[in-house]
Each structure stands twice: as structure tokens, then as C-alpha cells.
Amino acid sequence: MTHDILNNEHCNTSASGRKSHHSDKTKQNLITRLNRIEGQIRGIKGLIEKDTYCDDVINQIAATQAALNSVAKILLEGHLKSCVVERIQEGDHEVVDELLITIQKLIKK
Image: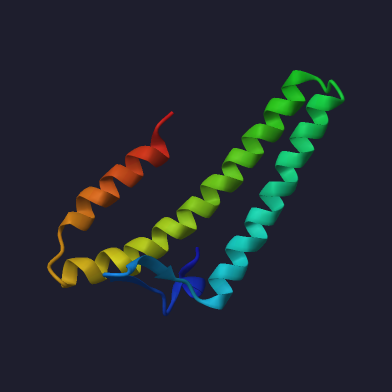
């Protein structure tokens, strides 16, 4: 799925704070997707302002949620393949609990 855009990424957990370092290709892909989502949200707002039929608005909301989930999946995959693996290799097993909390937030409804 996103294997090609996730290569050469890693996370930095230095004392100055945690940061991820995505490749330029991955970052651009995520920004493009988020820009599209931003447009979808503006479109939903416009539909509501125009009193569009509720079912049509709900369908647009569902499409936007799916797009956000896609961004989250890309980030999660990169996080697992780089940050989580690196931290476990360094002996930091707290990352597993952190990851479980993050996954619970993602799937919470």
C-alpha cells in the first residue's frame, strides 16, 4: 500500500522532544491528502448552508472520515515500521502501551 513512501523514515525521541521525520515524498502525499480533506470539509459546510438533503451531506461526511482514516493509516504504518521498531530495539517497551492508547483513540466511536 504505502511501502514505497515510508522508506527512510524515522522518529527522533531526543531530550528536546519527540518528532517524526517523514521523507519529502511521504510528507507531500500527506499534505495533498489533507488539502483534499480540507476542501471536502468546506464543501460539507457549503452543503449545509444550502440546505442540501441530509442524506447527501451525511454521505459527504462519511467520505471525509474515510479520507482522514486513510491519512491515519499511512501515519500508523510509518510509525510502526520506524519509531516503534526503533524504540523496541533500544529497549523502550513503553512504546507498546503508547501505541495501544493511540489505536484505541483511532477506533473509538
